[in-house]
Figure (cartoon, helix red, strand yellow):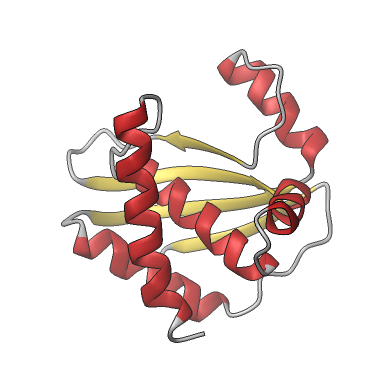
Length: 142
């Protein structure tokens, strides 16, 4: 599997890595893309906020930032940074389990690597529908 997991400035262990990796690979294949590799970097709010300011010019907290490095069409290659603090807060806010919220954010990042956006209302609707569709597939197997 070419999906890798790292922690930056926090202690975090992703449960069910193999199952989640297989699921994400399936998402990529269903969208007719090829996986080169993805790095997931789990971090704190402070760490991701600094990345958000430095690279995107946004002075806000966020749960995920995706960096797409692919130069080959229909190929996935990138880094996905995820704030575990944001994920936990959002899970409480949306009344979800933290694992479900984390998987939602992970597939959200992957969808960005698959060329889905979320800047317009129309794009956001499509993104949410894709997240829900793929998450349903995973949650039935967790």
